[in-house]
Length: 269
Figure 1: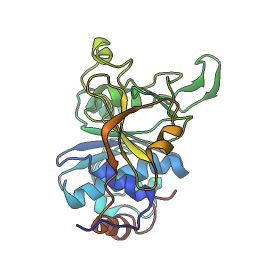
Figure 2 (figure 1 turned 90 degrees about the vertical axis):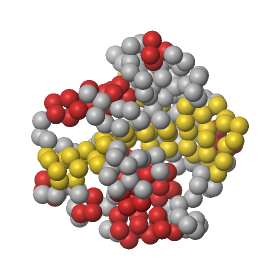
Figure 3 (figure 1 turned 90 degrees about the horizontal axis):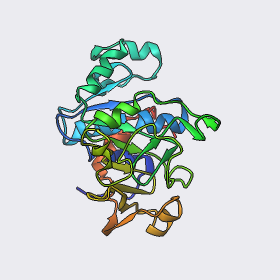
């Protein structure tokens, strides 16, 4: 299909995330507050899941806000409590223990995660900036993110590329990625897994198979390797074949704008 030359960075992130999803996946989507935090935590993941359903993964399902398999063809006009509780869905699970049980049993294939800090081994911090006991800033706390990285098969990280976010070492490990690299995750007793991709507004990263260091895979057309590196607090591995991120197709952009999010509810900022 023909690539589109007219797309936003949010739309590019939606498409990049959708391409990481597989038919039959069960996906965990978390919660967000408002503005950019909502777009990263909820908007882009839900749009990506729906796009995958409409293209290559019709049997994909999501768990979001205690809703198991909500009908993504009928996204409510407002994501308020009334609309969420009346959204057609396979089940509404009001007990958090159900969700935690599903996580610990490895039922989820993908989770979407974001954080104020991420380091070269994919460890995330959403707990505190600075010393834990005397922090400069207390953050939202662990929520279920610790379990995501412990039990979910292919966590995907969504975040804007900023030096204050991409740090050499997180101040507190809320979620264990690849810990200190190499085999340290397995040696700590954690299951195989760890973050699969880091999708940002400037580039996409993976993790090296042996060292487990973050590795630059593709750079968006609007950016460059030099700009990407300048926005990071550590030097990532640079793949030998870094390419330009594949642009969305005209069909994908039409689906996002006309079918998935025509009321601009999901991609608000």
